Length: 247
Image: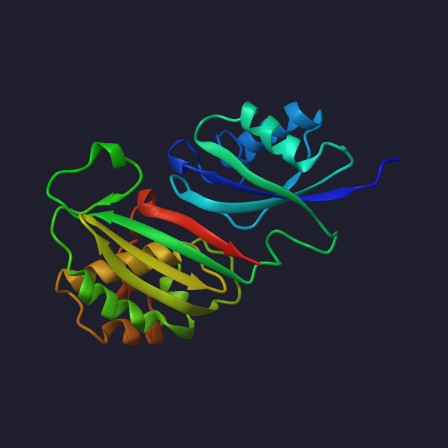
């Protein structure tokens, strides 16, 4: 019998056409399409374990999954063959062998998310489905100051949508901030983990500050209150990217 290998794949995808990463019944997902390609290349529909879950319409600049296989295909050849079998909105960036103790999800130390907002009166058709369109000019300096209130270790239950299954809602935010590049405003946040829709609620809350409905210091109070009703809306999925995964 051939020895079992654990392969770690790095992929990127545009989530616009998918109902998230995780396999679902009667819905096209990134994992399903990935497994279709794996079945073609490895001649077997191997199970895969992702580093995270992304929702419908959410993108990933960097996403990892591991797969156990007895196939002897070299990693470099697997990358080329899988990309030849995948649609244009998913790409395999790399593959390497890891030890059996490595786990794509549980070995993660930090994740960085990126949220993109196009804040111009006219939408950019080249970015359709890739950014949130906000028609009024944002005050990125104000948003950046308010974003600093997320830093630290807190119970973020007030920034979690109903339906989240996490029992432990304490998370640590190591870094976050808002910057502008022309008409594109970007919110980046790095933490040891994130709750269901947490980043999108962070963005929705920051936008409330820009609209004058919250003032500096209010986010600190909202986090401490653990009250979802005090935060902002859940911003749309189109601007959200899983940007980096750190092991």
